[in-house]
Length: 291
Image (cartoon, rainbow, N blue to C red; front, side, top):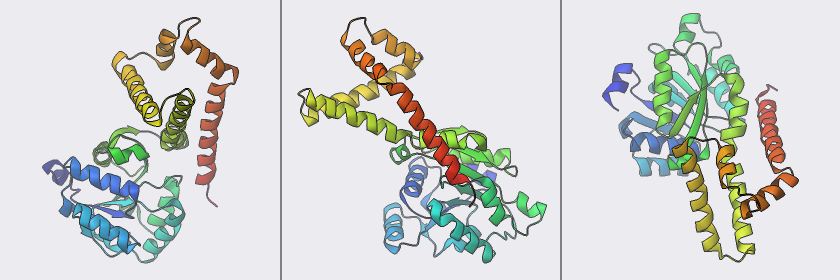
């Protein structure tokens, strides 16, 4: 791990759960040099999965979640949301969160689970000073993190210090872009960036099918579509104009683009997309409610 991290006191990071998103984080941290293999540990209930992670990334493998919590300065809870309650109950029951000295920065990448849920288990029976040594951060990553092009949003509880926030930003930046927001916005974040890649894939699917129906080969349709999508995103970044303005610039009266946009508008495509994204936000809010 680099000198800056050592000076901050966070010298090791451990992952409870070694699925795709945990792997994306591990690969990114190693690729950017944020952590050395010896400063990263992981555990998983699937022996074949943790064996793969160990062989691929040469990191430390620990036997269970208790060892991760006790031995690592930063603990990433990377199990599926439906497994989180059992994990927290088991860890709390074993006293894993009874940190004798120093701090443990707890990071969750499980979708839909609120900070108050983690506080309920992690802070149970603890004094104010003990809670102060267990800051908790909730993160919403997305799948492009697997390619180093992710969008991560996070919210932190009241215990997290500016130094903790800096550490979280450094970890997440290894996977792509990062935004720090209040927890009240996390359902919107989930709907826009968490689920957002699927919307993009859906639109790309449609472009591919349309291209083939118009006479292109699958290979031609794929190349044309992907290059066009990447080019459109790049144009937004370079020119700084809004998507609406850029669309207007290429939509000539009576032209081919206008013909397509007219069909989209006639069928209410924009309204349908907005309703779908809002439905995702509502679903995220519903899933985050305690039973």
